[in-house]
Every structure is written in structure tokens, then in C-alpha cells.
Length: 405
Ligand code: CAA
Image 1 (spheres, rainbow, N blue to C red):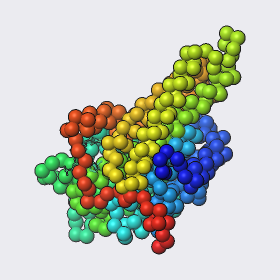
Image 2 (cartoon, rainbow, N blue to C red; image 1 turned 90 degrees about the vertical axis):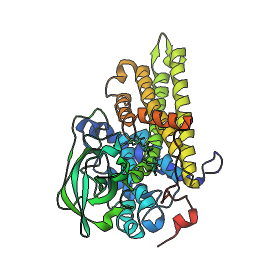
Image 3 (cartoon, rainbow, N blue to C red; image 1 turned 180 degrees about the vertical axis):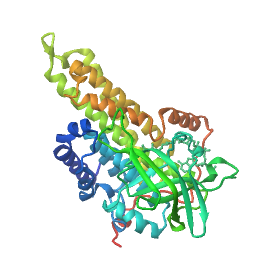
Image 4 (spheres, helix red, strand yellow; image 1 turned 90 degrees about the horizontal axis):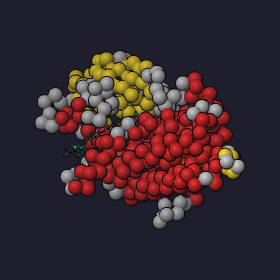
């Protein structure tokens, strides 16, 4: 992206994903949402189309596009179905991009490559029953035993818990660390390792066609070569993965605002009250104007964050702002869209009630709005400054990204 213009590649990928979503996902989304099941074709088709490795370098099995393209893909996916964007948030943002940033060459070949090709699915195992916002409070442990670690603990609210093959798992390796965040380390736990079990959580408000669950490790033996980064780097790895995951949540939420806006425009032009289409009533127009504003600002915020990633510039602050704003506004947009649809919006005959339910979770996961407000205040007040990392997310380089093995 140069200036504000998208290049032909970026537009082409976005168009391809839009077409996939409209033709292959949209016709069945209500059915799977009612069934509380994932469309079994969704992940294999995303793999086939290269979506699961869209911004990973070709030598690691990906398609070699830039980070802005990832944002556009997430926008198009969530415009159709939030569950597909959630897949990108955990598989790509939180796991694959974490490997790209922190993994060594061998780990990239072993874990990232099959993930980028869509042969294996990745997930992010950070949150625990007693530790969500307070990451440093996780209780999962990893004890060194010769050439292995023995991992025990339970993770909760994990997207793709019962579907993923590779979990980026965070555990406490130092029980006497001087600061709580220095106690954590990151590991790649594989679903077929002895002692790994998982299950789905039922009764969710939204993202019903997606998989969210728990994962348990009971004395799981994990080789040292599966440790990502150094011992004690787990907190920083988790936070930098969240810098990528939050980008996908922000761009996805922007797509959900667009979906609410488009549904509202269509309905407002069709529905008549007081002898004219409701689009002619000023209070409806006000809601449409708000939604347009929320969409435009959310888009600018995520494009800025994507551009900074492309340039290799640290973007924790900007990505947090994009995530906070877009998710809060996608909930408001879905609420206004439902209001425009009146009683029809309250039934699942129309899409907007699903948009409202699906928008709510993103205000909690990957940093609650309250966490983002604290972060933004800390940056503005000068209490918080980003430090250089041992491994930064690599800047996008078209030549390097396109290089064959
Ligand atoms: N990248 C790398 N390192 C970072 C970082 C980042 N973005 N942010 C902070 N760090 C480093 C700091 O530089 C500091 O390093 P030093 O030890 O060298 O000084 C260290 O981490 C600790 O920093 P702080 O004590 O300042 O901690 P913090 O303020 O950054 O973090 C917090 C506190 C903001 C509450 C943070 O824990 C947080 O963001 N919590 C929310 C967690 C979250 O988003 N969870 C979502 C789970 S995943 C999910 O929801 C997905 C799903 O499956 C549904």
C-alpha cells in the first residue's frame, strides 16, 4: 500500500475472499449458526484458497502477500461470517505470526509451513479459567526434565480447541521469578501428544458456528525443541502475538460494521412507513451516517496498523486503538442495524440479530475494551513505552516473501 491506494494484488485477494464468502459460506451460515456447528467445508476451502497462509512467505508454505492484505481478508471474511475471521485470528494472527516472529528456522519448517498450507490448524492457548486479562497469573506449569518439559494445566475459551493440531501454549517455567511476567515460557503443544485432551464449550451468545473450548495438558512431555523463544520470554511472546491477533480482530470488526451498514441500507430502501421508504426519515439517516463514520474510521485505523507492520514499525499502541474502536463500534453498528429492522431484526429471519450476537465477544477477547482504555491512557500519559524486542515481527519485503525454498 502506497498512500491510501490499495494495489492490484491486495484488491484481487480481497475480491477472491469476498466471492468465496458470498458463494460458499453465506448460503449456509444461518443453518450452522442454529446447529451450533462449524461448516465442515469452511477450513478445507480456506486452506485450498491459500487464505490460511495468505501473508506468510512462500518459503514457509504461504502466499507471500503483505500484512495489509491480511486485514482486507479479515474484513471480507467477517462481513460474511465472524467465525471465519476468528479462525484467522487464532490460526494466523496469534499462532502463525507468532512463529514467524519468534520461531527458529527448524520450528518454522516444522510448524509454520504446514499451518500456512492449511494442512495443520493452529490455536493460541493462553487464557485459563482463572487468568484472562491478567496474563501473568496463569497457573499452567512446564517443568524441565532432561531434554523435555512436562506441561500440566488447563486452558479455557480457546478458539479451535477441538479442531487445532498445534497449540501455542503458555506456561510457568520459573516459580521464583522476580516479576510475574518473567516466569512464563511458550511451547508448541501438539494435539496428538499423550495427555492432551480438549472439549467444546456450549451455550455461547455468539460465534455459534465456531469452535470455542477448553484444552487440558496432563503431564504432557514436550521436547525442548518445541519451546518457542527463550525461557522467560513467554509474556513478551504472548503480547506480540496479541499485536497481530488484535489486528485481525480490528479488521474483522470493520467488516462486521460494513455488513450492518449494507443490511441497513437495503432494508431502509425497501421498508415503507408513513407513506415512504424509511430511508427518507431523518432519524434513520442519522443511524446510517453513524455507521458510515464508524466504518471509515475503523478502516483507517486498521490500515494504519497494517501499514506499520509492513514497514516493520512497532504498532502495539495503534493496533490496540484499532481493536478497541472497531469492536466497540461493530457492536453499536449491529445494535443500530437491528433497530432499523424493527421487530424483523429481532428474529433470525434477518442477519442483524446474528451480527449483534457475534459482535459482542470481540469486546472481551484479545484484550477487553477496558484493557485497551488503560493501555491508551498509559501511552498518552507517558507511563508506557514500547521496548525493542529480541525478535521483532519482520517487515514485509516482497522479494523475500516471494522467494522459494
Ligand atoms: N510485545 C512484546 N512485549 C511486550 C508488549 C508487546 N506488545 N507489551 C509489553 N511487553 C513487555 C514489556 O516491554 C515488559 O518487558 P520488560 O520486562 O523488558 O520491561 C513486559 O512485557 C511486561 O510489561 P508490562 O508489565 O508493562 O505489562 P503490560 O502492561 O504490557 O501488560 C496487560 C498488562 C495490558 C494487562 C496485558 O497483560 C494484556 O494485554 N492483557 C490482556 C490479555 C489478552 O488480551 N488476552 C486475550 C487472550 S487470547 C484470546 O482471547 C483469543 C481466543 O482464543 C478467543
